[in-house]
Amino acid sequence: MADYDFTYAHITTAHPSKSQTSTIGADSVILVLVNIIIFLLGVSGNGIVIWISSLKLKRSVNTIWYLSLAVSDFIFCSFILFSIVYMATSAWPFGLFMCKFTSFIMFLNMFSSIFLLVIISVDRCASVVFPVWAQNHRTVKAASVLVALAWIVSVALSVPSAVAHSHETVSFSRFVCGFLIPFVIITLCYAIIVLKLKNNQMTKSSKPFKVMSALIVTFFVCWLPYHIFVLLEVYDKPNKSNIVRTGLMVSATLASANSCMNPFLYAFMGKDFKKTCWSSVLSKIENAMDDDVGTST
Image (cartoon, rainbow, N blue to C red; front, side):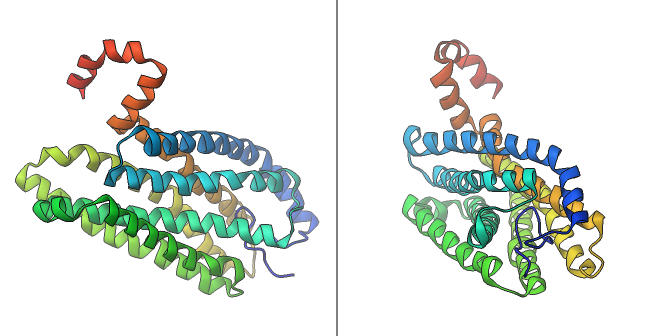
């Protein structure tokens, strides 16, 4: 039977051998616990971000970015339940369709997140380099159109993960389109931004720059090991090394962790999200400390 290309069992077949089952069982305890934490934090954290950005904050270009990333992460984190069952039982009781669909959701999250980060980087670059043009053309409607296009392209690029039979071609295209090219574009944008901010001392843009920088760094740190091990698996497939197999499982979990980290970055670095969350839970303390918080910020 062909490879499922499943999120956490990239090289296992529908009926793993006894040696595969024992290896998965030995590693699954920690991975199950970690993924339960990712699921709980990801669903609750991104749910809060969706609630805040859609109902509590004024609709703006920035909230469109936040909302879109949160929706992508929320959908993925919701599907981690299937992965937890697989890792806990070393069996996939949900059928071939759901296996393929779960893999599709993972890569939809990967592509949509990185494409949104590319759009955000270009947006930041345009705002710094061409502030007048950005002020006139940087609208909620334009941002919504770009987000819709990013999702459409993400769906198109994620479909081969569920239906294609050429594992090597799909893995390489994922790395190029979902990591390498976006990395080059984002690096160029942020190099231009850093130079512009340094030369013009435009400190006004430093806060959103820091937030988006944290999102981008977190994405690359979480996803780079996965791409490395996938490419290693392509060349190591005849040997099926235990190191590569274990690396795939651990790196896939690290990639999943990215989906629950973003809300915490918003909370610690995004002033609007931070103030909204605190005001709903500890409004009196927030009001009493408002001046001090503003000064320290």
